[in-house]
Image (tube, rainbow, N blue to C red):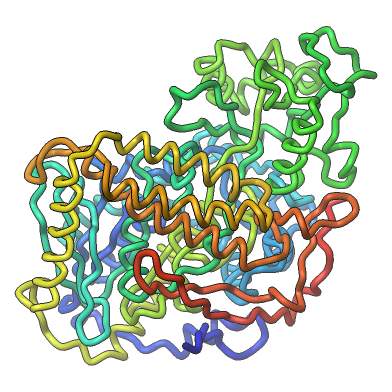
Length: 637
C-alpha cells in the first residue's frame, strides 16, 4: 500500500492557499442535498458540525454524553496557542511552526504543522467573536502566558478552564444550527461500526445507550472526532468514558492506525493515592509559569518542605535546562521527574512525587495575583488532597494525558478509507512524538472550523455517490456484526468484572509501555496481553441486558478494543527502536539521558493495517521529509 499524503506543491507558506485554490466546490443549493455524519462533539466535532450546518449541509451529530457540553475537551485547563505576538516578544507563524516540529521531536508532517500555525490566529478571532472570555491585561487587550517548549508567551487562556470556555463557544455555534434544523443531535449514542459501500464510508451503526436499540445512519461522508485513547492505561487524566472504540472499529474496517506508541505523559498531575482510584487529575502546565519544581538533594530526605533550606533543594529542571527552566516540554519534564524519584529523592508517602512550589511567586507578586491566575486550580488541588498550595508546595507526578497517535490522515484530514475524515486527537497528524502544551485545543478547532469544511466539500464534489439508504445490505451485515459481539459479551457470565480486567491491562501498559520502554519489557507485554485478552473473553462478567441502559456492557465493549489496541501500541513501540519525544527506548539515549533519535532508520510515520484479532498487523510507512526545519538533536538547555 502506498500512502499518498497529498501535500500540495509550492513553498510551505503557500501550500494551504494552493490547496484551497484547487479544491472543487459544492454550490449552496447542492449542499442541501448532502448528508454528513459527525461522531463526537468536543472541540473538533462541535466546530465541524456547526460549520458544516452553517454552510448548508445536513448534519447528523453524535455523542456518548447526555450533552455535547460534557465532551472531554471541557477538561483542558491551561490555554490555547496562537501566533498573534501580542506581547511583542518575537513570536511569528514560523516560530510556532518551528517550536511545534521541534517539540514533536521531528516526527510530524511539516505541511500539516505549518497550516496549524498559519490558522492559529483565525481561531482566536473566531472564539473572541463567539464571546469566549479570554483573560485580558490591564488595558483590556487579550493576555498571554508561557507554556512548555517555547521561549515566547503565545498562550491565550481563561484562568484554568480554557477548554470549558472554548467548548461552550463551539457548543453555542452547534446549538444554533440544531435550532435552525441543519444539525440533528443524537446524545447518548455510541458508534459501534463504520459502514462501507463500494469502498467508501457511507454510514455508521451504533447503540442507543439508554434504550439499547441498535440504530443505523447513512451519509455521504463520515467525520470522526472522538478523541484519544489514553484510557487504555486505566489510570489517566482522561474521562472514564473516553475510549478508542469508534476509531478502532474504523481501523478494523481498513483505516490505518498511525504511530500508536506515541503517548504523552503529563508532568503535572496529582499523584496516585491508592488502588481505589479510577482516574487521575491534571494540574495545568500553566502552573509551571510561576511554580518551581524541586526535590531534596539527598536521597531519603523525609523532612517537610518548610524544613528543607534552599541549599538542600535541587531545582533540577532549572539546573539541567537553564534556557527553558521549568517550561521544558512535557516529555522532558516527565522523564526528569521519574529519574529523580527513581534515585530515591521523590517526596510524599509513596516517594513518587516532586514539589511544585509557589512560595517565590507569592512573595514576589502577592497571593492575590496568584489567586487571580490559578484560583480554580488551587481550589481543585486542595479539595482532592486536603493541602493548601498557597501555604505548602503542591505534590505532582507524571500521568498519561494525551495520545499523539491516531488514525492516519492525508493533508485533507481524510483517512485511507475514502469518505472517512478524522479530526482532532483522533488523528495523528500534527504533533509528532510529543505535543506541546496548549496545542490540542488549537488543533481541534483548526480542524473543525477551518480545514474540514473546505476539504470535505472537495471530496463530495469529486465523487459519484450512489443514493443509498439504511436498508442496504452493508448495513444489515454491520448490524449483525455489532449484535453478535454484544450477545457474546453478555453470554460469557464469568467471574471477573470489567474493571478488574481493565486495571490489569492498565498496569501492564504502564509498566512496559509507559514513560520508559525497553526490548525485554515490550516482548514480555506482547506475551501477557494476549493471555489476558483470552481470559477476558472466557471469564468476564457483564450483568444486565442489551435492551436497557447497561454501563457494564458499554465498558466491556470498549475494553475489548483496548486489548487489541494495547497489543498494537507495544508492537509499534518494539518496532521503533529509537527514542523520540514521548516514546523513550532505554537502549537509545544520549550520555545525558536525553532521547536519541535514529533519523536514518525511523524518520517515518508508522501506519498499521489491521489483519484480525491475534494476528500481526502490517506496517506501512510514510516517509517524512524536512525541507524547512533542519533535523538536529533536540535541546532545551
